[in-house]
Length: 458
Image 1 (cartoon, rainbow, N blue to C red):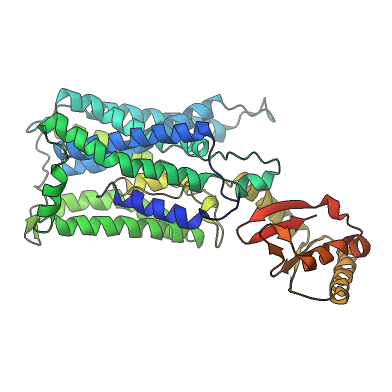
Image 2 (tube, rainbow, N blue to C red; image 1 turned 180 degrees about the horizontal axis):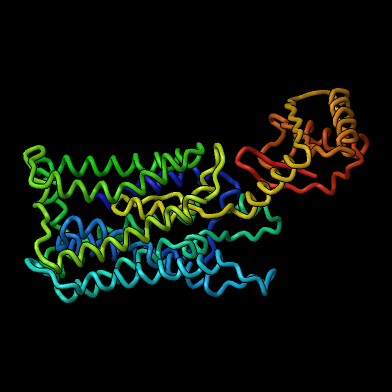
């Protein structure tokens, strides 16, 4: 349920938010290549999470398990390191900038350290209950495959729309992120129960009978309360991260909680162990009694250091502004309840989308050179004279601001102006007056479908 419930929530949310039942192209379907990539990433994610949760996680001590999960950023860190090394600054070919050199070195060191530490953890000798050989090999592979499935490259490739648009800001409006996430989450909802059955059949020769037995015993299980706490806490954590980023409190509500979550969790594993909660003992205390355990904890701590560096020097610099849309904050509208912090870090956008970046640059330019003036008018069934008066006022304002540093835009919202996608008589009357009053040719209009009707602009 911890693996399936977040995906069910994502499916329902994508259906309600992407105008699934409306005749609109605002939320197009992904390309076939993006669809196949989404299916492959879904299979990889389901297989890795199933094997990690049911096989690898129970064999690891709590502090080690918490720190190992920080290695999920390995693929993205290594990709950023390689990209940084290959980047050349063509504008200043002979400029030796120490800051750039240090940035490249730290990126490469961070990526290499993460991957190397993750690979070394599995093979460090542990006393007591050492993992099997297949677990040692599978641990770094699973973490790196999850990192690849949640990487920036995978997110962008899976969100490519089937409809190819030429206008730069339409690329932002016609993103396939909702429909792509809908399909990939639906794949996960179907594949996760099957993957669990396959695992139990291979390990214990049990089939689908595990589900009726499990649900029957769930009500009396001491794990029920911790399960519910984790389920709702991960959901509330995702909503809190979204709210923090969209209300310009990213440092307080996003960066600091993610930075402190791992140290706080490690502290709790050493302080509340063997204490009874709801008649259930959480876990045994972890004690460092030999040099191997010290080396193991130190190596695991390197994973958190690289995650903290990525959080402070990359994610903290991610752009944000008040009431930002979700598509400008996160690559895709989903979350993972098990790897919540790592999934949020990888899903957080590190740059503006192309359209938002252009708009942000225009805003900065307009503020520097004057500002912006918006005229917004609502109309319903006005007469020809009233429409002519409005267009005449717009024309005079346009002439005034055309010689100033201020940028001027006028918007007219015509209620009930279309039936389906066809303009009614009042909308046609308003369009017909543009040539006479504003010297604008109606044939030069650009048309776009929206969830609420049709938009025309010149």
